[in-house]
Image (tube, rainbow, N blue to C red; front, side):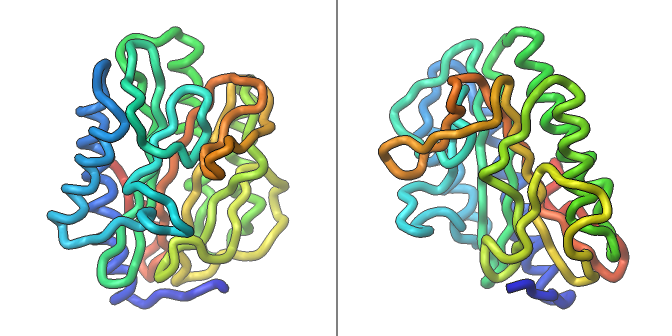
Length: 249
């Protein structure tokens, strides 16, 4: 179901989204060789609680943690465990928070120490593809405009865009309609409207776009074992224009 938010709803989303952005900033600083996924999850849980929010992910369809922590060839939904980060890893972190019934959701990919130029390029291009998608957002734009912009940047740089996992609407539910694919054709799909909020979240692979789900039922990896990066922001179409609610502070 597509929901239209009023200013009161958007204000609650701003609080949730600011908390998400703060968590990601703290995790960027904390993610270093020798730090475990559970260490990062504990940091996120503390900040979310201290800001008067609750985690969006914990308990969602039985998900057992506060964040998704996805290293290297893990695309999304990695469950924080005892894995310890190493020099040269990359780590995608997805965070969601709820404030007074409204969600904010965002993701970033971090390089752990020094990484090869190709890996730095993957991270940079994935963020650029997200921003290209965001640049298309306005009342009256079509969903295909967003996907086409993301796809053009990612594939133009020689990478592939994951098909099976996509962006989404957001508000009082973490996942609302419409779905926002990271590929598509300009001028196709439904029109965006004032009062909508969406998450644009490209997942970009070095190799093939195909995916596999591990036996835990959550962890999504690249089918060919190649590295993957993930960026996401929550974007609102307000009476004043387009607002990136989870922008870095």
